[in-house]
Image 1 (cartoon, one colour):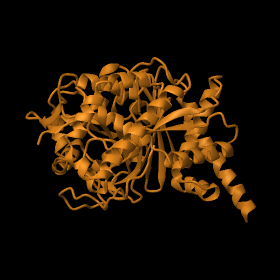
Image 2: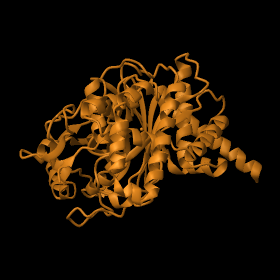
Image 3: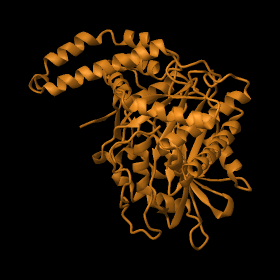
Image 4: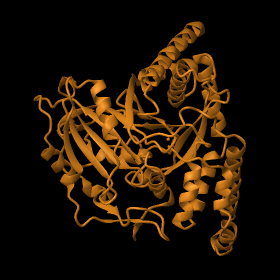
Length: 483
């Protein structure tokens, strides 16, 4: 069977086509210690390492049958007869002294450039020159190929559970082989629910014919109930958009293609300390930290934090354990209010927890996934219109993703993996995105921003760190009072 893009996969190509400022690649910087003998791998060693493992992921040797969507059918992934692995593996050196500042500057520039759609949509850079003899593998993969959780699964193919791994590219035990779990994502173009409804006006007759022709629905009433649930959820999402638009913000503006990047690293134990003292989950702590950072950014811009809060797009993983190495996108979206107007860290955290509880009882993610599925029945040209409306500034202000990574030490090419710095893409008029990734006891907040629209990204960076410190103090006081 042909390996065609799904409607959701195609969405990320369409968002890029609609605006030159939108980049829809995901990625990360995997930072390693030097090997025990003090050396770092060569580019040739990395090429050989990848060559032995790409057999698990055939899509990495495939390109799009057509570089653009739009026509009467979706592009497919087809074998690239001219595939040259060496063309996807580069080498670069960080300027001295190779600290966090130099790394952020390099990452911002590297992630400012799109992938070539005439080749397989990924590449990796072997980056040396980091402080302490460290080095990194920096990846760039188009979101049409894989989602955040899927990219973690694929990343295991480069990594080993022991420093001296046996060859063959065996995949380590998967922490991700848990039931699907929510985690915190990107968007674009102004639009309203009326646009979505207009784009889907042709669907009722088409859908009715499909349902009438589906004997399995008649034979299995539960499927009819599922259709009804999806319909109700879709209406809820559309009405929510029409009546409760995301607030206006300086974070949603015309922007250029250049990116600025910063990151915050914090021990996972700090987030667990807050969770233990104040309740909630580690996800709640992470989202509250982002809320506090965004509040500080708005205040530094002399901008009143909106009373209803900023709205974040948050994806929910719907990937099953059996889909460990399946590429493509298995996500649905939630819209979460970040209570930036709340005056204290305690109040912000309480509101984040309350919002999470409300979302657990809702059907929002079912509605957004249904709209994408319905749009997929349309020709690609119509689907592009719906996709842009679903990723509009009217729907959300910022992108926030949270992908739980492995809590074990991993290795590659004989070196220990020290940390993973994640990237979330930015669509048009969404100038800030936050990606959160946990690995081996450390959580890293990767902050991606439009360089021209967010020259003050350091304010957000410092604000996130300050919010976590403040919540730790609050949790410590709560523990003392409880004792």
